[in-house]
Length: 440
Image (tube, rainbow, N blue to C red; front, side, top):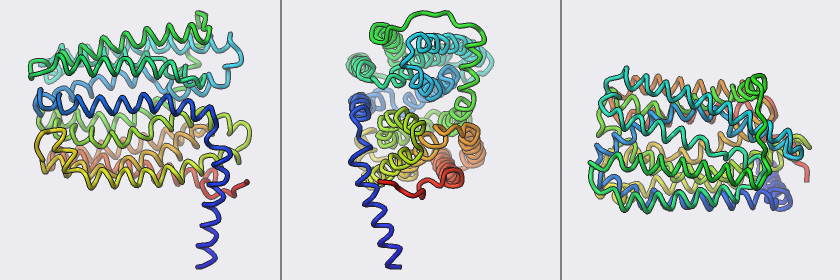
């Protein structure tokens, strides 16, 4: 037993020594810093505006806004199509070849335009066909349009170049304007449409500015892609798209089922709790985004270098997110009171049910996105997220009619635990990570 403990301690010391030399490269630090500057403003906006929106719109109004936002999320996931990962990886490999880089970027843009048009037509069809959507048709249409506009932000292009500073500046500017406009314009339930109109205008402006910046900074030229090139980028992103569609199944679908089977009040209760936990989940976003292209390059150089790199991230990130999840659990009463103006036992319970999610999502990002996806196990990654989505949908259908918003919380937790178990087992079976021998 003493030998096992000593071996484990030596392994941790080795990881820490490797990390000091290799993990925090200047490129990673610059991109992570830029992304975290955006992330902190994204925290500021909910911390200031979420209480304002909930108190101005009421739980019912906020629930309706969340219901329409989840509807728009389906159009966005179609337009995004996994390009945030597949296009980022490809562009990172082509960035030394300006012509090939421009051709790939234009092919992705054309593919997104086709998918966005299809998504908008499908959204209009759903609004016409489904009475609960049609009852608030303008709200649902504007939410779909706003989501599609946001999906045209070329974050994937800046990530591929590993130069996120300009994109961060645009995001900070639009988030700050969103904060100011919401506070100035939204005061009562009848102001619900103003929230969506502000989002739509800022998403359009942000996308236009970002593409202009990309053109100036990276000298991107318009090269009309062939149909074969568009089909190629669609094929490259297919498994990732299906994987992310699985994520939508256990995120947006909970809200859609609640809105259909329960009430706007139940949607509001669940959405408030989920937004509180989402603050902790989003802490992992910038570092995951910055790690992805760096890990991709390291895996092309040496798998051992990449494993050392990810071991360090796994150790330090795991410790940090244990603390984040524990903090969300013990402060649930206070956070709910700050957001809603009163302590709702049901919202507090759902926050505590979902509190492990910052840790589980960070870990399955390391095993799934950073390792399996970067190594080309796209079908393994796809089946992991699709199976988690199917589990979530099944559990939601069973629990929501019985437990309402609390059932939706349990369904999301169960699906995320499955996702982590699946990715960690697959990573161990296919790569022996994180137990592969370390090299100094």
